[in-house]
Length: 639
View 1 (tube, rainbow, N blue to C red):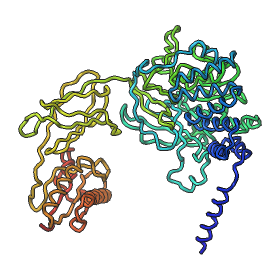
View 2 (view 1 turned 135 degrees about the vertical axis):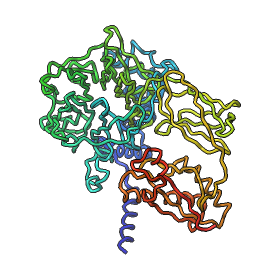
View 3 (view 1 turned 180 degrees about the vertical axis):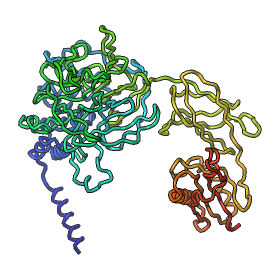
View 4 (view 1 turned 90 degrees about the horizontal axis):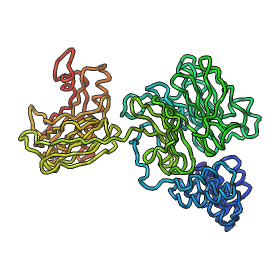
């Protein structure tokens, strides 16, 4: 009865809400609170009521712009300006900005000309008039980098703002939950204003190799990640101090400022000291001025300069790049210096990073890019050099920003929202090298035509696909120095996977041998199959294991009265109790695979015996002997 009453109450509440008339006052309240999704919905309801004043178009454009929905933002900016061409010229600028993010450069140029006409003294307008035709044409700047998934990203969450902590440690910012394993703390987690996401925190991850995805990461501990929105962080070379961006509201003395009080994204720079494994004693940096934005710090490898972006007095227009000398082991600073008009324009320049070979990478939304934020480089070794757009691949019509690059190891990482969310990708120099080979029958040594080969990287993204020609040969182009797995498949032969790595130079041809499939044999009342491999410490059936078990499925279909017992064994590494549990899980996974293929459950038994019944008695054991002991046996209970 109680459930019925609650359900009825909910129906009534929904009906009342549906009948509520849209309110421009409520929409404006949502907008002022920066809850742009609710504001957008309320303004849209006002439009549906056949009320289409210019003001509502303006507000919808601003809401969509804040939400990063560039197509809709451009649409409503255009509608607002069509109804009232005398609107503030800033609307023409935002229209152009959103048009470039959709690749509509000519339409964006037309909007920028109207902006420049109405804002002749604006530094952005002056820059535009000098570079009006500089927007890219297809293929104009071919990519020199290869971009791939990093492993850091999680669906729906934002991941961005990178810096190196050490050579093998990367810091990044994310708004994923900080308390995955503690649901009660997650329930009361501080949320970003106007969204359902947690506030951003600073994480670190370890880089194990040039290719391995970065799946493991941890939240920095201490007062640094608490109830405030935190931004990019960077370590002092001593590893005793960390500089990071955070809400200006974090600093008590700034809270009286009218803009800081709104808590709508104004950031300042802070430092924290390491005490054991935690970061404590947070202080605002002494040169930070109240009411201005300071973001995205970077510290040189020698620890002599701190670079950052700010709109403090002396800036050319929006955010500029600045630097300040670091003194007294990181706790004192010299005079702040603007990097000058070789780098800074009236647009936003942001995310400074200097590699070991003295290349300055930075982000700018200046006119002439691919749209939104683009990444530029400047050779600091050459006093005459000018910033260069890094071109396609790195830059897209969306926002691409914050490139950190290890020039000695030839790889880096990039933040971008190219798929409509802020993600982190790995970046390598674009280099292709041919990988050649030939496939043979393992018994007759004859070459095999029509063999399917699929090359994938360590995160299982497909790099290339090819079939052998009539001579059994194949050639594919792969990125240089790339670890890969090649999946080899031909009807009538056993499926096979082999690991490899492409070279910078053309290597020797690979020779691949395939075995013909034969009917499983029965020996000593056991069905004899090839190994059923499992990943280390895992109980998931691999692709190779599936192909082998498919032979068993066919065999059991032909012998429809046969019953079997699956007995899984492990090697002698580790504790026996754990090994028995792991082997039982593997036996159960094998049995479940057979059931999923249509074999009746009553025809299958499974058990795990761990390392108690080794095939090879050894102590210590070689890797070959360990491999022999890691096995699954298929014992016939009934024929």
